[in-house]
Length: 503
Image (cartoon, rainbow, N blue to C red; front, side):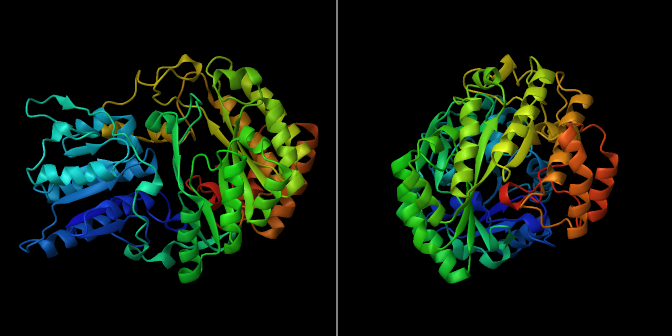
């Protein structure tokens, strides 16, 4: 018996399919029994639920022989560490396994923790299956790609990652192992929105991004017909009416985009995805029209900066002029663009912030429907160099306990990083601008601000927006706080976000 754990990463109202542990479970041999414990479900005591499974299986022919947790940086790490320590203390004889993005980027503190027995770096499906053979004494752990552990002499064994495979080479998501209805919730896309992942990796070279740190410049995509088949099942059997694609890069080229559109069109779903600005600009008018008919409602693009010099330093591979053209193209076809920007160039943070704020105003003029997502730059370990020549391995925590401190959670989530080139004054400039913008132009994501509050916010923000004065919008912040049904939620992601991390 294997227990696959998705530690809490968000608030229950934001929960979505636990795709990572579902993928591990789907890859297990048919003879292996397994159960998912999802810490994002409301009212669930995760430690107690896992312990009840362990106790129920004790003394049977199939006891629990591994507890495996997926761990992303940020809030999930903060919950995974105390949960893992408690489980190890309570069930010392059961191997604890970690996988996921955090350990792939920072294996040393995981291996050194004393309460994680095995770490899987990179793609974990096949590695986990081989780990079970290790636990059975049938395989040498040092021979398993991606498997990391502390050796008998106390030294670390950090294995090279496994050559990974694409979605078409992996089993279908095991939807029968979860209660689908618990994960479908209203968003601006629809009444019963779900999530899906149709590819792995990204072929581009943005040197600030954690995706290429884990996968390198590679991407493998699923056959659009297979994607449509899985979504048709969710639509037909469970009433899912909209979908958020978690792919880091959904479109490869014009021909593949048309194939996606033609496969999804019969389903009648509204959907959100991520795409490259330059890839979108290579689409023909016919492809845009097909995507619109197929349900594409919003497309997220990493714009990152309004400065061509900064974009070059990021190895972003696009220009500010292309971003402006993408805004115009999405307006022409009635698709909402969501542009993300990274604030805090390590060399000239103030200049970059001023340039990018002015650029966002220009984007708003070209496409008033444009949505803004903002992040503060924090370095991520890269395979070849880092944006701004910052070495992120200098000064990062050596222990998991230190990684869970608030200052490092803020660093990992890009919300409030403690970095020497970005002081509170500059962070406030970005936050004040964002508050004014999103008050003057309420987000389509915003389901939590009442109608009167939106009207008052627009009125108060109008003069500031027209004059370009954003600093210290105290009254606007008070109105927003009064008008919100729930506080702002920086843990929400993509179309689940009411408005992104506005404070």
